[in-house]
Image 1: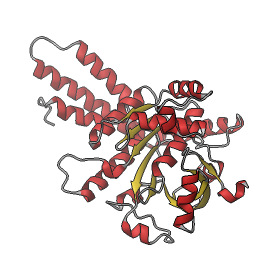
Image 2: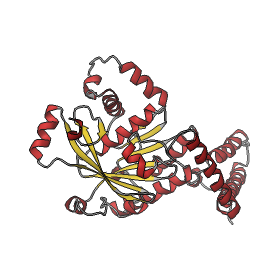
Image 3: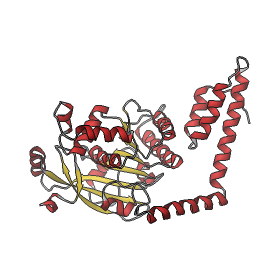
Image 4: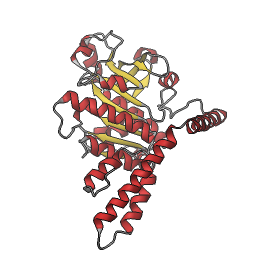
Length: 348
């Protein structure tokens, strides 16, 4: 094998693919501290050899039979302990019991695709899940390719306090505002609004994992860019595969928000999930959920939204590798962004 000196960018691209970032981080820290004044090229080659050896050891340790069985037993014991402690889910609760039941919560290494047509409420649905994780003091890393950090915090506060988030940003007072802000600070949420290129996002996920992450959210996948891509199909396909690989390697769930295609919008009763850009999104998903307005008449929907009344939406699980599929009725308040289980009629 040729271990000749390579550009730092090339070595960085190798590192982006490694899940055991902590081990490699130690190697690089040691290397940086001991860089010689001369013969840097030879030294860089030696460090690259060490990195490659670490990669081989990590991959072998994960794949041999005894390690696989050992990991299974350790996982079984951890789940067993959770249930003995009264935790009825394998993963982290979404805050929605009817959703948690068939999926066992947000599970390590799983990838979700949360899809919907334009203005169906994808971002708001994701932020409701995020707000529920904040209440559990879980750390969420949010990659927003549409909204600013101020917009996201305002929406989160609106959901948490059940008020209009924009009004809070404009100065409206609320007795629990400071407590909610402290909860957000305590959860140590990270919001990235400056990362659009696929490898930048994945590299950022790897770095964020070093300090702990319970969930990654990308809003939304069709806005991700790929250097050298020949079109939307290639970009979306590569993104889907790379995000799936990253979720597995970092043992952290990822929620990707996605538009559905025109075919998907036309075939609402179809059990298949049609995502815009590439079928790879549906293929990699452990869970695919479609967010859809369930009001029968558009006039009633817009009237209720204008008046601040709850409207009927559905979260339809169209794919679930590990459990049942089906439709969950939800109530959505357009003024506050708050979503709760059950249709509005159930609350009267």
